[in-house]
Length: 365
Image 1: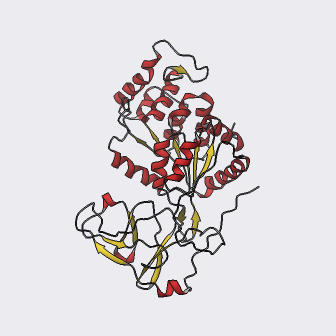
Image 2: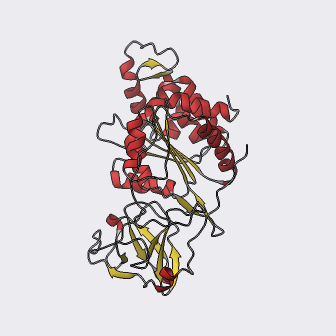
Image 3: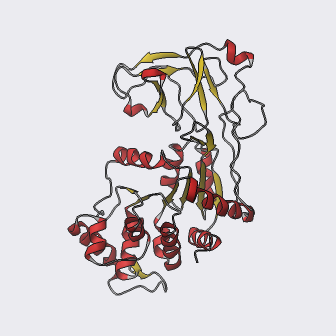
């Protein structure tokens, strides 16, 4: 089988409701970080706004943000905390042209039926679901995205605890299947611990045997990396050459490590300010065309909330943005759907097995 990019069907703007719809109404921001009353909040779907009689698509979007009209009628989707005094924010809470706003939920289907309230929640899938076709489709998608897209991996620390999973992800990076990585301090720390000491949290990453005083290992790694001043310099100082972080540094794959209160160390590049971390994550996500979130509930939900279901390409065409959520606990993947990321594809699986299967399916192992 080969990958076939779904066709996008834009709204039919010759319909009466589009022709008769009013232009959007805006109101200026009076205080930095405070949206005006009745602001419009975005979803993950393509949304069109009528400005000076013309319907315009917000080309970069995300959930739960405001729409600001800039110079030349450019639409910018902005988090409320990033609004500035004087920004012209679009108002209106309807989705079917009443306020000059149209939410296009079925753009990648030729079903032209528009539901009155399209932005609703639904249940995901379970551990009893068959995922065989999902894997086959994902293999073909990744092959396509390697050449024509941008693949971002969102990873919890589970991968760093298994030798095969580390190797699988290393091979994906080395072979061009990763264009960005989002994680926390733990993934990077334990992966580097594996590179330096062949342990993760003091356990051998292959045999799982605990090593004497092994509970110091990750702390020592953080300490040594902080002395080196950066992850890249730490890798150079200790001549490391295996695992996820080494591969990202070697191949220039950008990564964002978002900190948390419980972090040890942390490593030098970990961003401790949560809003700066969110901004850095979004800089990675805004280029993504496929995002795969694995074994990290909070990072998955955070990433899902800043990931739209579509991407406007350089030539102006619209394509889907693929979002996968993978976890051994079906509660975790379905929680993403409950939070509104309805376009996500969920897979209930052990992520160590998942990533190894992906590498094998792509012929890398």
